Image (cartoon, rainbow, N blue to C red):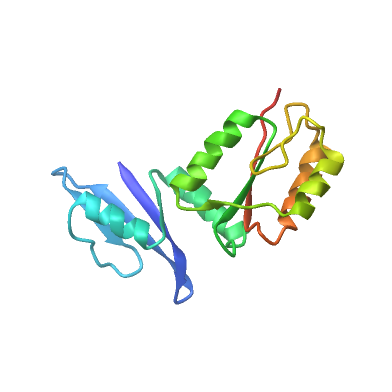
Length: 165
């Protein structure tokens, strides 16, 4: 198994990349691509070091390239305040748990943002974070909700969840 991680912080114009693998004797090896320096110690220490350094750990080359594509095409958020928009409450709650598990925080939507959302979303929708537009939400509600929450100064990034019903 190859584990691949990409460092979030830019260093000298490049991102720090870490490869981790088991050698032919089953021994775990970890190596920094940009410096060539091995990370010595047990797995728990290496995991803690990577996590504290802001590393995103990926477990396949497919995941690595998907993550790299995100970094290449999306700006790095200003902070860790996340807003979730969804058309289904359950996945919104699961995403909330993940946001908290990964050390980020749920954005507190402003009164103005909530009022704007309430002006076009159905009465049954929740305008708290996560914003649950309910199962019947049309594409137009996704567009307007996304524009509204991205305009909120208290939101650094948005997770959009769509379930086809």
